[in-house]
Image (tube, rainbow over all chains, first blue to last red; front, side, top):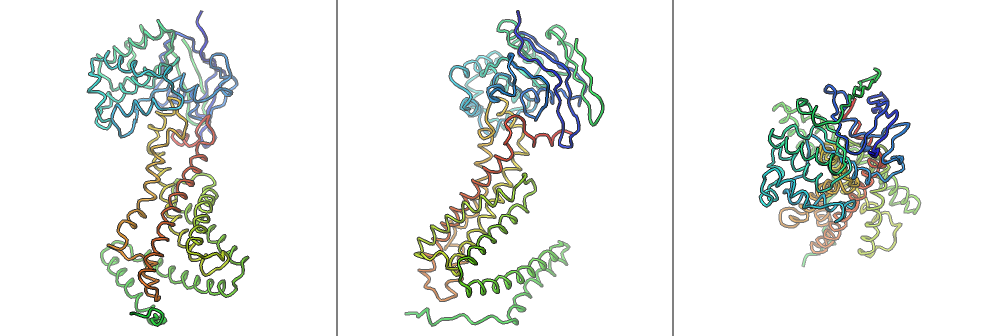
Amino acid sequence: MNETFIAIKNLSLFNNKKELILAINEFSLKSGEFIHLVGPSGSGKSLFLKSLIYLYPIQFDTYLFLGLDTSKQNIFELRRKMLYLNQFPELGDKTVSEVYKTFESLKINSPQNWQKKRAEDFISMLSISWSEWLKRPVSYLSGGELQILQHSLASAADPLIYLLDETLSAIDQEKRKLILEYYVKKTKSQQKSVILIDHHTSDMAEISTRDFLSLTTHSRNLVSRQEN
Amino acid sequence: MRDYNKLNMPNISHQEIIAISFLTLFVGIFSWKMGWSLHRPLWISTLRCLVQLSLLGYVLGYIFQANHPAITLFSIASITVVAAIASSARLPLAVRGQRRLNFVALICSTWPITLITLIVLQQYDLTKPTIIIPLLGLILGHSLNGITLGVERFTSELNSNRAYFISLISFGATPYEASQDLLKNSIKVSITPVINSMSVAGIVTVPGMMTGQIMSNVSPIQAALYQYVIMVAVSSSIFVGSYIGIKLTAKQLFKSSKGFDFLLSDVS
């Protein structure tokens, strides 16, 4: 039986003007699920993913992670287990090798939960030379390569949940397919979960286990939600 | 051998003040003719400078004459408060309570360093206004600039590097870990002017205090040594003040680990 990773009831977020900008009535995520988060631009999909890792001061009736109240959990461990990757990663003015070192040196990481070898395997899977890759200055990487670097960091971290915010948008079709297969394998063989925002819907039907329609609103309009 | 005690600078009269002010007048007219619109702020700030310095002269005259510990303490507390207000007024991205934070940074950096400097200069009477007020004022003036530069850089870099900050936070970094590079860059920005000044002191420039002392009859060697003591005190104070100022600003911004209010300005 699949374990419930996330259970949410009545989650809301207000902006600095105290206007409601995100409201989710009910949401749940189980282990092994691959959710395609859909909705028009500006509908709050990214806001929802960022809210899940408490980047914003959210309010809720219930927000459980692995059955425990998230407000009482260590926020850094929570973020480490529920990794958010963004569309336009900025990883500093360093070489790729230094970026790995920066992330590896975070207090939250240990040799047990951070394995650079997994990043190497991920990069090799995309037919990129690991030794050459490490030498590349981040400022010279294309948008797609930056996204690949971020995915490889996530593979080294190996969290329970991957929150992917349009993180395949700048990657070519061939590599995109390989990366999607990588995440599908994670959900099927390792019971990890993925929530993906992606506007290429053609291949999502066969990959995702379900869609989640996030319809939020600007200002005072009501928010609705629909789940397949 | 030159007898420095017999050399005195003549008193400056109103005519001389008017004469030197013509320089600003000419520069302002030039800027006006060129259409750069710098004449108004230049003239206003020159006038303010004259009024403020004259008032300072009168006030200091009164304080020196009174020579009372309570008045001295009140004076140094007042100039620290004014420095904190001035340092936060120029910050476009100030956080809530920035004045209070800058005041803490200034008092924690300038007061102990002024005390150490007084001891080094063998001025053990800490209530003597003729020493402590000008010295603290000098250190405060530089420190407030350093804190303003450092905090301004930190908040603006955090604002423009949100994606980098979020990338690290998303991987479980603490806000302090995620802002380490920004902190380092900000301290560098605040300390760079004084490092540059120290590097060229005596080669390109004769620093202000040394110039004043030489003009007031002090031996150039002694003036140079005094200047060295002051520059070390100033640079240390800027470093400590900026570090505390930036750390307190960061603490205010990151006070809630569960959600960052400042990121909300992204969404409407």
